[in-house]
Amino acid sequence: MSGGKTSMDHRRREGTLFDVPRPGRTGVRLPPLDVPTADPGALFGAAHRPEVAGEVEASEVDVVRHFTRLSLLNFAIDTALYPLGSCTMKHNPRINEEIARLPGFAEVHPYTAEHLVQGALELLWLLEERLKVLTGFARVTLQPSAGANGELAGTLMVRAAHIARGNARRHVLVPDSAHGTNPASAHFAGYSVVELASSARGTLDLAELEAKLTDEVAALMITVPNTIGVFEENILKIAEMVHAKGAYLYLDGANFNAFVGKVRPADMGVDVMHMNLHKTFSTPHGGGGPGAEIGRAHV
Ligand SMILES: Cc1ncc(COP(=O)(O)O)c(C=O)c1O
Image 1: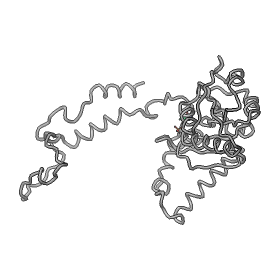
Image 2 (image 1 turned 90 degrees about the vertical axis):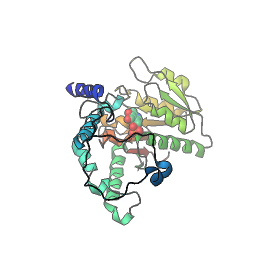
Image 3 (image 1 turned 30 degrees about the vertical axis):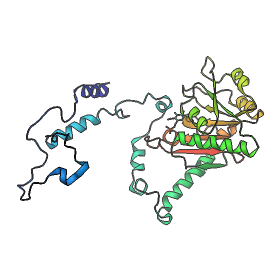
Image 4 (image 1 turned 90 degrees about the horizontal axis):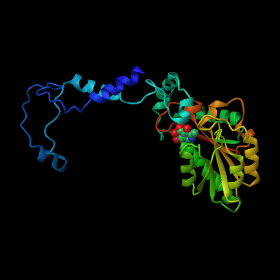
């Protein structure tokens, strides 16, 4: 791809602004000053760094072009696709970036007085209500600020539900195809992670599940379609097996976009799930992107 080639060429060529001395060049020309010369050591004390020899001598265009060339080294969806697991399966149209940048949303401060952000709050509430319809769940929260954050909230909910029944249990089952955040979240929630080897087709192996599904399993975390893009055709059977052991079925809903509007996760037997809004709802992807946590009333 020509975009990638251009970036690589810059990577090879671009040094730092200090590399090519351009004596006398400057971005500004101040008029002669009639103030006495000051001693920087006396002025700045410990903050003065005499070991830094001089400053970059560069014109304004030198500086602007240097940083523009550096910016081309960023890997961006504008030059290529993200070959990052399930991130490859979605597209965030440019219009969504524009909408997220509207001053009424982008510049809202977390401590803005409630009466000044009623529009934004209404939008959040409406989104929660719509997500309830699409998933079939009783409650939704938009508090988690990323998918991984939603996973942690969800696994802590699972833990709380088990504790309320008298036993937190010890393990969470995670297929070997899962996104790395799944075992990390289960671990953070205080569980030991038991890996499930996938079948030759890349789906969950029911015999492997049967063997590892003990009374100490708190939940099975499953991704549908999974990170290699395969649907779990046995999802109803899997839910039945998990529930029969008193465990919960957790859905990593990062790839909900693949079946949203066709099947409701609650009808698949899922008890709790998170969604990455930067995937299914194509909000801008950056810094994690907003997440959402959803559960049945009894969790
Ligand atoms: C399947 C899956 N689960 C979880 C995550 C974690 O989500 P986030 O990056 O929003 O924390 C991702 C990441 O993009 C993912 O692809």
